[in-house]
Length: 275
Image 1: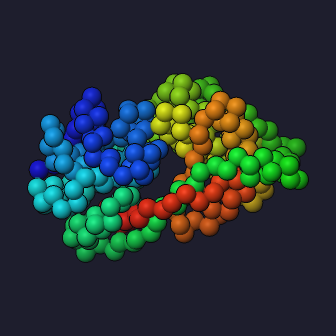
Image 2 (image 1 turned 30 degrees about the vertical axis):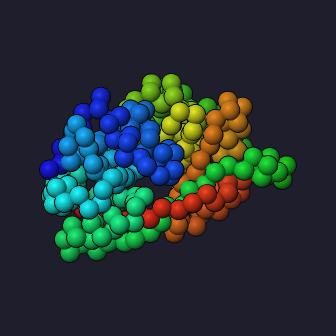
């Protein structure tokens, strides 16, 4: 059996977080705490043994017993029908991207892909090295072109810019929620947001950073570095922890993380296929 867990009962799956990476994973815990958008499915509401957590716009997290047959026997139907439609409705997503804290989940998922082509990759987790970050600030800095400006992301900017609004509301329930708990910076060209760096999720004082570029013509002009430095400086001023996660295969993202002073922490297996 698989049932949707009421939001007020999300705390019940905290006992399934048994290893250090589960207990500190920012996106997962931001959903469980109710800070960021998400949906939780379990084998039973009162004493869940197994759960799948959907972080809207970011992916799925499989928790608990990977050999729970009462859960696994319904997993294929859940993915093919419920999760597929839910992902499409909530953020236009068409892929299942599952993060596996226990790699035994790979065997369970291989049984339910039902002939689909699947991919096994790794999510790479980084933590900020403040010494390296400050040394980076001392290096020759990128300079914004005259037609560009950097601004703080506000509710008014989110509501006025369609690309930014669609981007942020994948992770946050509203512009107001983002403004209350997260923050970020954007680069403007002719009053249009062309790139942004912001908190995609918040777990206590741990902020997960994400950088989005809406205009492909401005890639490789140092905007990610400029935005990232501005964002991280404010995180440090507020005494927030700042973290970066990317796919092992995403070399550009890994290069930006390195430029900003992030150090490799650990990796987790990801299991991906198109719905």
